[in-house]
Image (cartoon, rainbow, N blue to C red; front, side):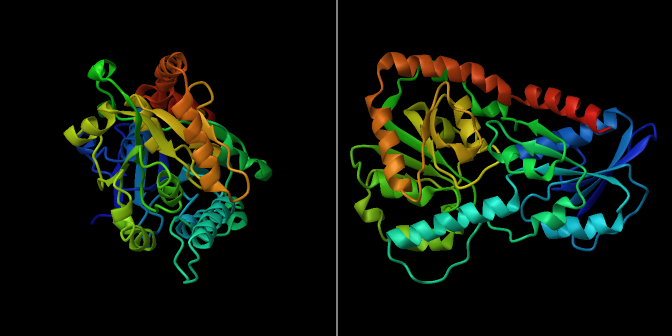
Length: 370
């Protein structure tokens, strides 16, 4: 697989080095299964339109070396790319460097994810050691020593707040949502308020799936649809696959593409989505389902501001299951007027996460950077 792509502007002006994830040079073939694929293409397009040439280095590239003089370096180094970012930054120390923070500061994120694993093992009296998925173990101080400014994916202030101690300019950017996540027919569907959906990415314990499942084991009358690559988190799956026989109200669907028939079948009958993640920039699994008409039940660390339309899980200490259960009880007791008003408020909030909103916000940030 090719790991370095060059996008040349028609008029030579300046050079951007972008360290993120490779996309095809034909923007029309970009895979939108994850919103950041489209967002990367939009970053490239935006700079090309300003006369910049772009060198895009894939996150798996381990032997990169400078090929030209760069005017700006943007790197998604908030997670697993931290060490590769350092290798690249040391080769171009005089170039203005921007951290594209898709999540909170790595030391904060690692601590919060570790706490989730500890909580899971304590609840189930598990003593075996396990690899903690979604932890990165890079040194945040080393990373920030090369960073001049920060673009932070964020909506409610959680993620950007973890970087304030470094006294660097922070530009908040909300993620985009694919157009395929919404269907106008959803307005005609009758929602089952006992039906919940959980959309997750890799790392099910870090994303709080174990907490939600442990909570739903006490609510056999409620239905939960779980969507995502659950078998990739082997520690999680080895435990819960033995318990499925006692949880007939939970359905595991695996990865469900947004916009597919299965996707719309699931969200058309569900009223709520639930998410209790350890640490997110701004969880696109939440914002995508918001576009699909599902009211969110989530915690502050998901990074989505749901105060005007959702129910926030207030985690205190390590009582994650208790706090999740309390919030579900609130959801089950809400009045019809609250539910309808929340749907209207969420409809307007969804405008913050469109591709148009991302494009406009990004353009303003780029003007500040250059």
